[in-house]
Length: 254
Image 1 (cartoon, helix red, strand yellow):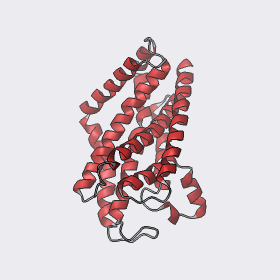
Image 2 (cartoon, rainbow, N blue to C red; image 1 turned 30 degrees about the vertical axis):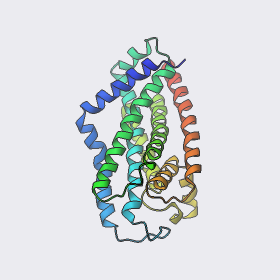
Image 3 (cartoon, rainbow, N blue to C red; image 1 turned 45 degrees about the horizontal axis):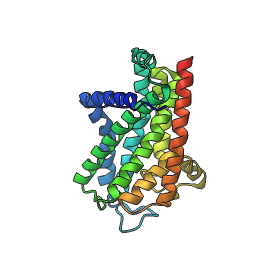
Image 4 (tube, rainbow, N blue to C red; image 1 turned 90 degrees about the horizontal axis):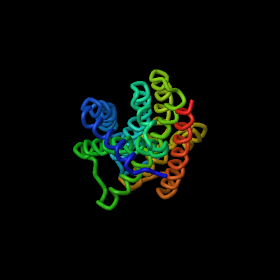
């Protein structure tokens, strides 16, 4: 049975940690902001094949950078689990009456909230740089898509942290994973411009569907159907939640 109090306490702890660590907020948006400024302005007048003339590269790039922010912030959630394990906090949580499912959901809720906050900060920066937001009804849809993207990569991070249990090993593996996922996702250029062999890999990347869905609701352009993108994200979210719960239980039982 899911215990909402346990979920809330773990979520609140993550929020307190997030707002106390100002360097964490700045560090998480520094790289996306750097890429947005230099690529957005540097390629502003470049025309990419496959893009409608009405959509400038800066407008096209912003949803991709938001996806990048979500990917990096969410995937590194597993690092907190490893640190909690090393400092003994996780052991204290595991001996409480809270069941494992509630503990995992609390971790996911906290990390998802911080990931979305980072993405909203990044989107706000983009607006000040000239990004045109869609009409108000599309904003909740964009936030929902951000939540699904966060869920998927948070759970991937939790699976890796449950298997490795070592901070250095986690950093090595997660860096090896997130950079290819980012580059294959179409965040920087249309997936349709890639060679067929690489395009197949892109369609196996969850972030591809997240970025495409974000573009669909934020700028009104997507290479695939937004409905199909969201369905794929929902399915992957459910699969990764069960996977992270399984590996977390298995890892802590060892």
